Image (cartoon, rainbow, N blue to C red; front, side, top):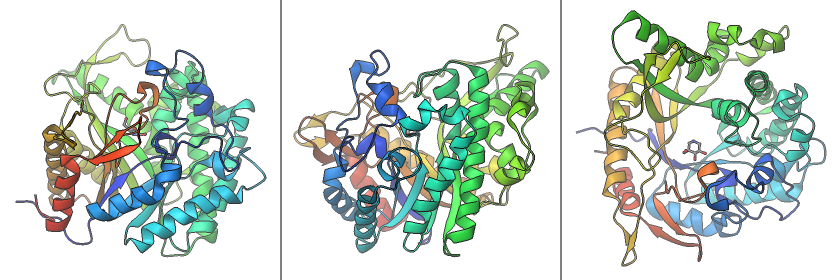
Length: 440
Ligand code: IFM
């Protein structure tokens, strides 16, 4: 039996662009994702997030749902294009007011808010000036962060600067499968440094102005990387892949330097004196999102890393990702050992499955098993010394899964997008019981 102490937070997570909709309301201006979605060919089925889960209007209902499920903490993101629609300058009070209403309602319901400042929705006006390839976007972010932190740090005590900068960098600027849709490794390398610099500057603003009991961290998506065999070549390939997938966004944060793989990719061209010290400003916690393990083989034909990830096998989710809870345990222990001691929140973990509604219910036993196994992995990592303080299911609601549109469903709550009806899945009921009993 595994048990979770009463101060271990059991929560759920969402992100603004994936649930809010109302993209033209109350002064919000377009983000890079609005532009990306409305460019044909980018999103499966031609989907967009103009309405998404209509959470901008249904937020009270959604808070009530969380209250009924006994959710202890809610991680959501603030949309920069609602708060400073042009990216810099004029603050839009209506945008701040929305998040103030939401935060007040959460607190009243006894749910602890955790705010992510950047979950990929860069104001498009900034993209027109070069986006994350432009160093001054880091200053724009620090200004925006300061507005949000000053407004909310009286009542919110957990803040995250960036969500998964690896995805914003690699999917957005190297692979081009996410906004802003650029395919250029050099652009990605520049963007990664400016994202991290933005983080460091925001932490500086936080330390200057936020109440001292509030905490700030950054969320990385981390992959457990293992060699396909114990040959030296595969081990070296796995090490290079780990540099690309994990250490790119861990070493600068915790060691004030980039890994050798990034030095080789020319990151030094973007680094100015003092940047790395700023990026490595001490964090109060690290957010870890975990979805995948990568088994890596040496591959001399791969121009970038000389390494290849083997196709996932075994028990797969609808995203094609292998269910591998041991990877979560390994990632938590590795981060604690190599970069700790540091408090950790698992800020996202979850699975998409092709859910069906049967007589008003969704029987998602596969998701219950997935969550249960991953929570056991968290418990095991805690036993082995990782200082994990909470776990957030991705996600509260089915929502807009970026380039995959609405097909993958990650929620504990099913969303009928035509009617906006919410149906609590069996996994939602299971999670409510877990929170009550605190035992697996
Ligand atoms: O939906 C995303 C989320 O926005 C960031 N982390 C991974 C999730 C599932 O792909």
